[in-house]
Image (tube, rainbow, N blue to C red; front, side, top):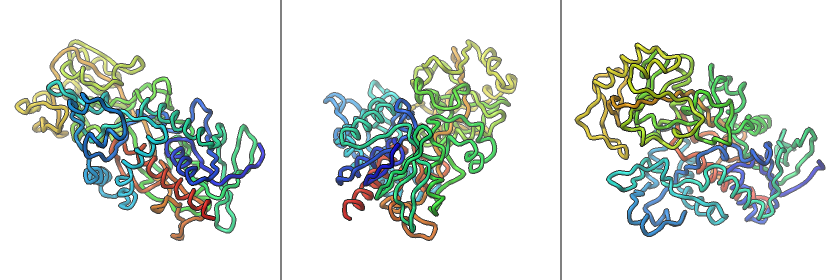
Length: 495
């Protein structure tokens, strides 16, 4: 490969990177994107997501600006609303009020205009009926603030964004990884890249790092997240090894955020070590609020109904990892099986089924069967059956007298057939990263911005701590990506 030059270099090719590239191109900048993965596996974690996107909307008329709705849908579907105040409250609440206020407000305020801009670039969205709505009295009712997902999920999102990039003349190079940044007198002037073993330089007036966190780097996971995190499965790409973070830290960038925290979920016990695009996001198992989870000791260990799944799933993977042998079983009965999410109906999963509880507990591999049966009976006796069950709201149908309570959606497990699903921890992305300002310029440890260097997506630290509201990842990537691209494009075209 020969050395090349461009106005803006974008390292990465996922959702945040594509938004950065498209935004920079709008300013007339020439743009090169580097993707470490081959084309079929390109797009980072974005390709592996289910595609949910958390966005501010004040009613169905706002949603109609993001996707097409029929008159019947507008009339008969309860989409609800999700205001900026609700979004900010949810983000701050689940992060224990540690989220960087400037970044958090920017994410919330720019979520809707950014997604409307994405649609203008050819990205398509649709209502998230399958995962975020229940039928109540014959009418779909959305819950948890999520009413939008990318058309075609993560693969559809990446394909449409890459198509838009190519239509705009953006030079997208696959199997080409950035190795280190080129810096001179404190100014970033591009990067050294590697393609099939050959190294070459890309000189750029501005560089945007948007190549993910360090979740696929076993050594970094163990160093920063702690013991046993080397045993976690990776939900997405194997190419997110923290390279962008390392390159920036090497030239003095300021680390920021929750370096010992990550997004991690319940993931099929026998899923492969990294994401599998044939299955996509369906190794996840997120209907636990409708049942119970038990560990190897046969004991419940978490409040499955503490909140909507959107506000607990990203932290419960870490809780599962902390259990004996790093696994759990989710248990359901026939009353709720038809309400389980679509991922419970795929062929590749670790599942058992039985007509009695006594038979079921014996099939839960690795579990103390006798203790598990005692746990289920104690749970059944504690359910507040006098409170109506309603999966579309926090119904207050909990338990009484248990050491580990269940706060909502508690049902007696008494109706055959019974089903159970084995899960372990699947890590999605890490929370620690680089500090940026409101223009997404990377900050130096001395407090000043690093000239020529911007960042977006999962390698930006400071937004998420301990947990995150479902659907925020793709939207934060898009918002920060567009801002980084705008900043880079303005900087190089104003010279």
